Each structure stands twice: as C-alpha cells, then as structure tokens.
Length: 80
Image: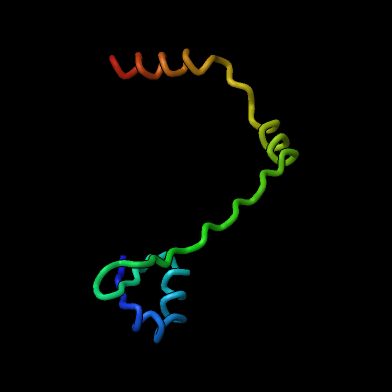
C-alpha cells in the first residue's frame, strides 16, 4: 500500500485513481498522518443462471459410491 500527501493526491488524482483501478490501495496523509484511503470499488457479482446450472449438473454422471466411501477407499489405498 502506498502513501501520498494530500497535496500530491490533489495534483495527481487521475494517476492515483488509475493505480487503484488496477488493484492498488493508497493512503492519503495530512501532515504525515493517514486521513483517507483510496481502494477499488468491489465489482458486483454476476447472478447465477439457475437453468444453466441445472443443465450443467444434469450432464455430470452420478457417483456409484457415497462420498464417505470414496474418501475411505482413497485413505485406505494409501496405507498399503
């Protein structure tokens, strides 16, 4: 995280916003003490398309054994 003075932030705001937009975070200081922080805005998550998810999961073959049995067999096969 970078620090810049308030005067520097005023003079180079566009550049600072570009840096923050690329994932950075910048503290703005006044008389050497942090007073504000520039951070990127959280991007909204895309909604899940339930129909597409159902179609995808329908193509996955059913498992022949339970997850517990699968884990046990994997664990036991490593003991040999």
